[in-house]
Amino acid sequence: MFRTALQHGLLYYTVSIAAVDKRLEKMELRFAKSLDELTKTLDKFLKRVTDIEEEFIFMKEDLRRVKAVLREKLGVSLD
Image 1 (cartoon, rainbow, N blue to C red):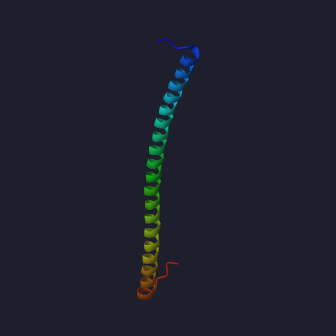
Image 2 (tube, helix red, strand yellow):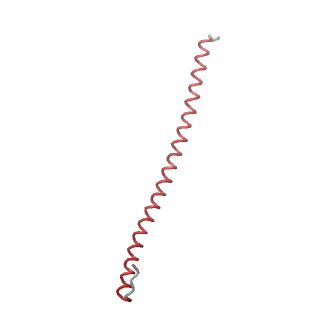
Image 3 (spheres, one colour):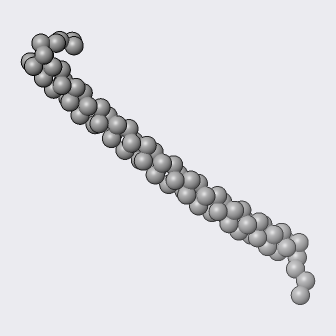
């Protein structure tokens, strides 16, 4: 069966839109995956920074106690 030029053009247009939609969907999936990986990486980084900050606070308090003991027992002031 022969198609008219208009039917052929519409068929080509429909096929082209479907191909573009498929490519766009693949791009969106890759973008979503990349965004998810970036989010996980940032979460891990923030956890490490928070852990380091907490450890710094503990070490600072430990140092304060050591200075207090040195001051009390040896009469040495490190301030």
